[in-house]
Length: 131
Image (cartoon, rainbow, N blue to C red; front, side, top):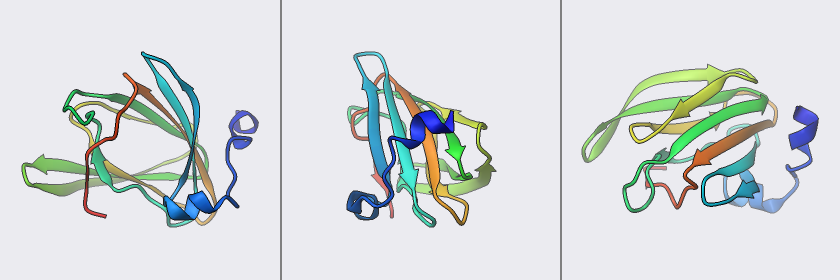
C-alpha cells in the first residue's frame, strides 16, 4: 500500500534535487532488486535502456503508487533514439520491459510521485543517452 512505501521517501532530502529524483533500496540479492523512487514535479530520468553495462538484459516492472508516471518510449536506431510513444500511467498501472525497452520516466503530475521498481537480475548501471 501507499502507507507501506511512503516511509521510504523523504522529499526534503537534498539528494532528490541533486539526482533529479530520490531512490531507496528496499531489497537486493543475486536474483532481484527492489527500489522505491520519489519524484518531485518535473523530475525525470535520462533516456535509458534496460541492459547491464556488459550488454546483458535486465527485466523491469515499474508502477506508480502515488501520482502519475509518464513514460516516453524510444526506438533504438543505432546511434540515435527516436521517440515513438508517450504514455501516462495512473497508480497501480504497470510498465514493464526488458532488453528491448528504451525509455525515459517522468513525474506527469503537479504533486510528488512515488514509484516502485523491480529489476531481475539486479541492475548494474544502465546505459543512458541525452539529458
